[in-house]
Amino acid sequence: MSKYTFVLAVMLTFSLAFAGCGKKNEQPKEANAPQNTAVSGQVPPKPEVAPTTPPKMETGETPSADAAGPVLSKPITEERTLFSFEDGFDGFEIPTWADEKTDLVAKSVSLSKSYASNGKQSLCLVAEFPGKIWTAAMVELEQYLDLSPYRLISVDIYIPETAPLGLKAKIILTVGSGWTWTEMVRNVPLDPGKWVTVAASLEDGSLDWKRAEVNEEFKKDIRKLDIRIESNKRPEYSGPVYIDNIKVGK
Image 1 (cartoon, helix red, strand yellow):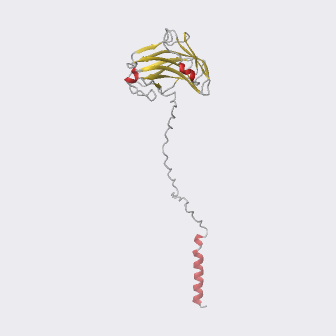
Image 2 (cartoon, rainbow, N blue to C red; image 1 turned 45 degrees about the horizontal axis):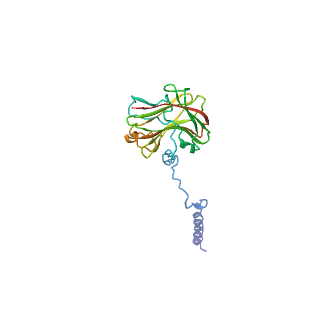
Image 3 (tube, rainbow, N blue to C red; image 1 turned 30 degrees about the vertical axis):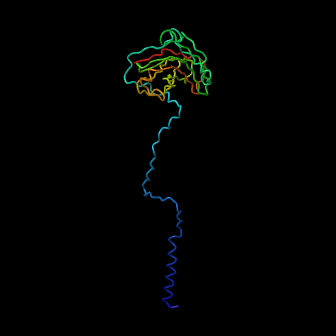
């Protein structure tokens, strides 16, 4: 072998050796591996998060007891008492159809001089709320009422101071020739030992009534008026509920 051939062979050997060194410890990249694009010393921006919205209320679910009371366009300046139970039951009774409903738990209704928010006596409804399930007790008046001149309807309700917290109340109207059952959207919590006024707006466009368009036609043809006391799984309570001073205002 000549001197020049030997030198050329040595140079070729060193060239091949250095060509493989740079990749000896490099790990092969996975085809779908994420790329780290952050610049050294900088925090990658946080991904945007869509704002959350409150869950929709399920059908039949009642709004919170803390919901606001009736909203009126102007103050009530004139009131009229429709029923004060001073001379009798004024047509109110436990409806006969309630006997067929296991979740309606009214037992009796009478007149009482024990408590009254107006005058000397009130209507006393005795109920047995068992707890654990939704139950209600109600009294009903089946009578034609024209409430078109008025903007508010209300009733006073009292439970003894020994009664538990948790009972609530609402007004229900049966309206028009279709006898449409129309409840207040709100349940008003009762406060043991105190008279509580349950009230709803009758102004045009009022939002106080479920699935109802409140207008003159709605108000002038009331077929039934119900007062309902409710226990939504709790509390358990057996005893009286006093109802008085059903009135309207304009």
